[in-house]
Amino acid sequence: MRREGLMILISITFTLPWIISHLLHIHYPPHLKSLLSGIAVISAGFIISWSAETAEIDIPRSLSLAVVAFLAVLPEYAVDVYFAWMAGKFGGEYVHYATANMTGANRLLLGIGWSLVALIAMKRLRSIKVELDEGLRLETTILLIATIYSFTIPLKSSIHPIDSIFLISIFIAYIYLATKAYREEVTLEGVPRYLSSFPDLTRRTIVIALLSFSAFVIFVSVEAFAEGLIETAKSFGFDEFLMVQWVAPIASESPEFVVAMYLVRRMRVTAGMNSLISSKVNQWTLLIGTLPLVYSLSLGFFSPLPLDSRQREEIILTASQSLFGLAVISNLRISLWEALTLITLFISQFIYESVEMRYILSLIYLSLSFPIILKERKQIMKSLRVIFP
Image 1 (cartoon, one colour):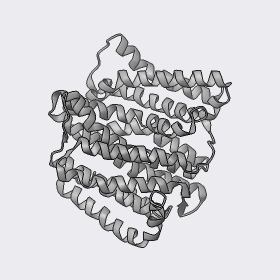
Image 2 (cartoon, one colour; image 1 turned 135 degrees about the horizontal axis):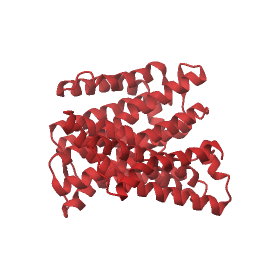
Image 3 (cartoon, one colour; image 1 turned 90 degrees about the vertical axis):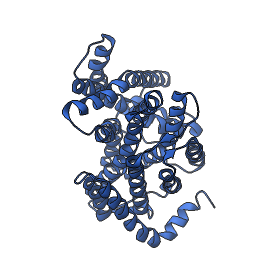
């Protein structure tokens, strides 16, 4: 068996301990429950990433971007949707967890994902900067609109269904414009390339089977993973909010990071960055927009998802980081100091966890953003013309 086929088999094997335990109703201590179900979610994430990329060969152009974008972040959606649903059913801390997971995933994607991919690319290229492709202007413009809008959410102390309409509309506009924009031909690497080598009918059958299996794994794992994290935090005296905010996204986002870094190591820098930037667009529009709708569906009537002071601070910090990340790539270039600044500021939030620190970091992000935006205003206007010619 080729190495790529073995990778698929290994990923499937890693899901089996939890699936068997679930089917046999075997009960574990919270930390083991979250570990086994978390490994299953991570493994399913890898299978989804490979299958989604392979599916681009067969899905019509007008649908491929939407389908692949959604599938790539399905593990993250599953966790957040679970918390939003439970918030509607039981309220209480679940309301906080939905926002915690969403803000953590977004900050992790940018603070660690973007910066590490850029640093790895610089090492591979033996350069102190990374040049990005013109094709990313659409993503940066959509993300800019969503980021500016996100600053209004804390002012209302809730994520309203009206916010859902606006943010989901932005995502739909992004997909529509992306189908019209020029894109490089799909060049598959690794496992997707291996899957693409099969005859059409065999390949499609394998991809559908892998996606169906992964969806099943996530469905039977997400509740145990989410609840296991919360119970583990309570058992060991950890902050439950922080556990949900960081450990859950690390598990759900890790397949995306690995795939992006693999692409960069194969010298496909733009493809690697594009996958993470597209995921950021997806999470900062469709994911946020989905939360109040799931919450309302669980309640049985339309209602905004409430935000307390901690959640408002987290959204402000996440939006500020997003603006800085956009400022950094506005000229389609990431320098060494910019990548190091992104990762340093991300890590610094863990040094001193407090209300003051969240606001200080937000101000630092904003104070760094505005000079870059002013300097690169011509580049930003050029990007805006992609949508507003």
